[in-house]
Length: 161
Image (cartoon, rainbow, N blue to C red; front, side):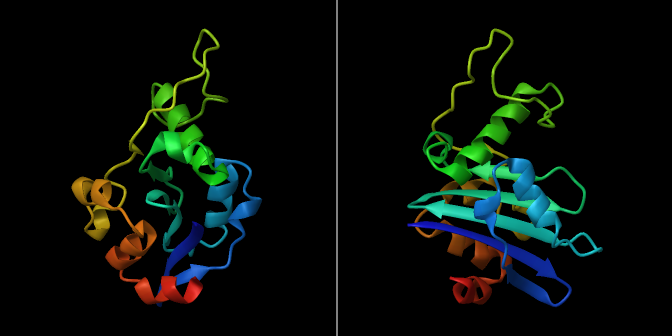
């Protein structure tokens, strides 16, 4: 089962955003869609996707560079949304400043950067919500539900599903 949901923190609390992430062909598209819903106070957007026990999370805070995490990069690279996240993370890793400005994931010799097995990205992505590196790396089963639980928006997620 593949689940993709965008959760948004508003002044009234968390809500599920009706955004068509399937229309996002690139990571920049995903971020643009998330930012279309950002409230002036820097509301957090968390698109999350899950297939089986593998998951990916993107955190968009105002104008800051989005945080990204995938639980299994090699597995994520086999799905459209996961591949988008993995490619972004590999671009960031290839950049000296880590900002992800590279056009592709090829190195100076034109070789493709190998996609690592296992977690990739910002393991402290949800730290400010009380989920540190150890907890994020330990998520399995319904990881999207676990993320929603950490954020305090389980009911919102259940209603969106």
